[in-house]
Length: 140
Image (cartoon, rainbow, N blue to C red; front, side, top):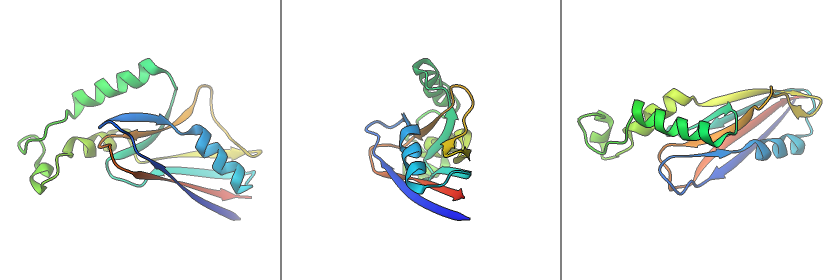
C-alpha cells in the first residue's frame, strides 16, 4: 500500500466563504500516482470545514444564511462563552461542527469516484488568515 500527503493553504479574505477545491485535490491525486484507494481531505483548523456538495451559487448562499441563522456571529460573551477567552469566533466553532471536518472519496482507476454534481469544498468560518487543508491518499 502506498501513501501520499499534501497540504493546501487558503486565505479567505472574508469572515465566511466557500472555495471549490476539487481541482487541487484532483491534482494531488495525479501527483500521488495512486489508482485505487481512498482520498481523505480534512480541514486542519477548528474554525473551518471540508464538505461535498453541488457547486451551485444559490446553494452556497443558502448555506451562508442557514449557518448564520443557526450560529450567528456575535462578539459578545453571553451567547458564546468561548468568547470569554478573548477570541470572538465562538460562532465559527459551531459552524464547523455543523458542516463537518473531512470527507473521504473513493479513488477508482486514478480518479475521484464522485456521484453526479459532487464537488469538494473548503468552508471558512473565521477567515482573513492562512489555514491548511490536508489531502491524504492511500492505496495502490
